[in-house]
Amino acid sequence: MTAGFGALDQAIVVLYLAGMLGVGVLTASRIRDFRDFFIAGGRLTTPLLTCTLVSTYYGLDVTFGSSETAFYEGIAAFVAYSAPFYVFYVAAALLVVPRLRRLSAISLPEVMGDAYGPPARAAAALASFVYSAPIISVAGMGLIGATFFGIEPWLGCVIGASVALAYTVLGGLLADAMTDAVQFVIMCVSAAVAAAIVLVKVGGPEAIGARLGSEALAPLGTLSAWELLVFVGIAMTPLVEPAFYQRTFAAAATSQIVRALLIGTVLWACYDWIVVYLGLAGRDLVAAGHLPADLDGSAALLAVVAWALPPGLLGLFVAGCFAAAMSTVDSYTLIAAGNIVYDGWQSLTGRRLSDRTLLLATRLLAAVTLAAALGLSLLFERLRDAWIFMSTVLLSTVFWPLLAVLFLPRLATPRAGRWSALVGLAVSLTLFVAFQTLGSPTDDESLAITVALVGRPLVLAREAGLLIALPLSLTGFVAGWLADRRVGRSP
Amino acid sequence: MTVVTWLAILVLGPGSLAVFWFFLRDLKAVMGERRSNGECDSRTEPGVR
Image (cartoon, rainbow over the protein chains, first blue to last red):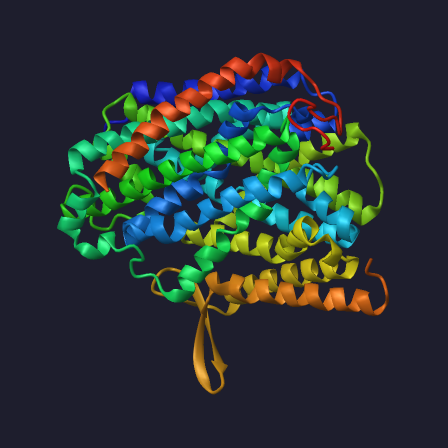
């Protein structure tokens, strides 16, 4: 157990976990059908939507991933990785949400299915499942358990995931959103308090930059051009994000979800900045000898707060980390399970399931989803790589078809969407398997394949998969559209 | 950048508490009301859905 993490801190974390279970029990009686379970009956208002969006979309992948990137790359973690997202959050709020609200679907794959047919819906369901499997947050809870409670990482994963699973299975999205609200305030306040204390103890970014060297504050750090391109590409995810879509359909009114996304964008930017600052402070503390020289970047944030915070506040921060993880685990487990049952199973079999069967199957599959997430989490050394892989699969499968449905419906012909989705899904998954089996380890713990291009060697890193799969998905869309046009299927 | 960090702290801490306070104010409505599929909020969404 980490020094300084005492009985009071442990009690705070245990109390928090018990409180989450209580919310699940409280909301369980509100569930009457699948619509209640999956989109909370369509009655969420701006404050609750803000809480659930902010806490769901920012889990341990952002908390640990951004601080890890800042630890290695400095302020570039904010400028190059986080900032491009804000453009697409605002675009999602102002351009995507009003169009989505005119549709009668309740999930992202259903939007695909309504426009392009069952195969496209099934492909989108699988892509959404891969994207939504809460790989990073499940693994992160193991890290927290091992760091602060001295238990085996797998046991931390199982305890955290079991609590999240219990209340999600009981109360669906309503329990998920209600717990998200509590988790939201814990994660935001604990991050703000931790940053304020570290700021006083360590000094601001300028002071850190003066000690570490100016490259720590360089806006683009040491990132290469292709890495920047991948980051900007990944930042488009909010336009086709399953949790955003689910909450858009769950909102009581269009204005409520638009406001929530805009308020959320401001809070996300603040959270990003604080987490990046804490990662940078970790590097500074390592250089000063206060933290171990072999400290791994993914553990930098926890190490900094454990060094800086007094008892009680440390417990609050650990509860905040659990909150960030659980709010992501519960939401995406619900989406992943719902996508497979509601979208995948129904579109593949052509059978419409009763509400009772939908509810039962989704609840059962939630447990399977968490087990799969735990297995997948073992395949990635760096947290950010897992996030890039998941986003690549989602974007490659649904980006072009969904954009066509929302903005250019005349181009949204059946073959266009189907071919684009199937090509994108197949290419992104094939690339992943190819990198895992044929790739060689790189200096930054990733995998790369060297291919010959016009007689010259070209090194392809695993993270560059998006730059291959997304254009091929677009090619599939254009080819499908041309095929439909030729046989006179287009409207 | 230090000023930006303090600003982020001030917005994130008190800002999240303010949002949470509004959530508590809405809690009764969220737990109590139930809208049917396709029903629109006529006050805010005239003509939509």
